[in-house]
Length: 143
Length: 487
Image (cartoon, rainbow over all chains, first blue to last red; front, side, top):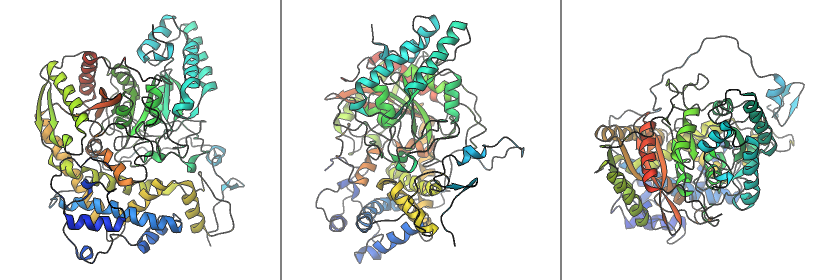
């Protein structure tokens, strides 16, 4: 157990919520106390529902094209809930009327002259391809 | 008389120019050192013995001919393995890129070579730079040269360990949320994350593109400044590169720091910061006061939200950046059993990526998905604005901000790796500079029971010269750089 607490957070314990975290993560005190914090208690919290269900994890993994084993689905659901619980800390920030910063340099579009330049030789471009055929990348079956 | 592998970049270049030392002698000594310690430290994914010796021969030939010599002539540079090196495998310490051989050089690599640097190897890292310990590397962890049972920090842990233990003169790392400063702090070296846009990212394999920068790592501030002078400056190949001229950062190191206004954010000394770390860092801040700086406490209230905002943004960008790894043009590919593309991609990415990378891609995909986008990603970007505003405000009042680099001293290998959130917490003091895009440096400032502590200095955009000057002055007064790890 780490003794550290999030700098700048004080007295943010909420025993009810902390209990909830402990129950969901299934371990008694391995969870650092700086992760417990006051949140706006949402309905789903009252119902004791997780932030992300196992079915949702399966769906998101499918969207991201990442296969998960049964054990991983279990483990990731638990870990992702712990992390999302912490992420909800951002709810406490007052951001009404604050514009988002997508990028620190105020760049819009960067253009260059549309000139033909030397490109990578075909052989070089194909060199790292695990599968190739007649000068093409070989993709898996699409239809 | 120091052993050859202990020479600084300044000493190496001067000795080679004067003919006192040949590049071949020096590189041979470095290779000897690698053979001596590498099996205990594991800094490298690839050691480039033959290439390095050959290049050393070329440089010696230039010396004999009387040709102009570059600013890094003969210097052994270790390059993090997410920076592309033409013809040399570049793995990101991932099974996905285990056999990837880039057909081109990153801009920073071209710049190193044009200044006669010698690339000695590619260094171990957390897989795709996702981690703070190098433990997520597919090739196994790097060890801390100060205590082989502890983490060297990460994600540029191999770069830091190689420089710290004398396996390289200097190194390149990359810093998305502290990945240069954290291992610099844990290995007692100097590491600088430049202002976003100062150093070209062309050829850096992307993790979170709006946050990351390549930066220099060295055993002392002069070498760090020298390396930054070589790699900095506008690059048309990187559309997010800033239109700034390259600068010689070594020439301004000697200026005075009289009256330098240093703000000390109270949030950096919250309850998460180990008391012993806080004590060492305060001692360093008082040292800076003795040297003429004026220090005062300041508050940046939005820092409380920085860590959560950082991880949401970094993971969101990662989910998009790492979508390119499908095992078709490059990367790991499972045996084709005639399955459809979706199944094959999903398997390639399951076996090609380690658990932390998969966790971050999945969370990032979640944060960007319909219904959650506003709640997570957009909210985090608004917080990013608040953090920038807090930095802008405090840096109108102060020239630089100072605090610890890491809230806790280097911990044991395996101690935190099974609890992702607990590991994320270690980045709490380094991520704010990335969110704001501001430059930050970590310099050795003391020890706790033989374990290094780093002082972090953060400045306004493109004030690297000021950070380096403060670091250089501090270093000269404190004299810590001569203390090397007991390996």
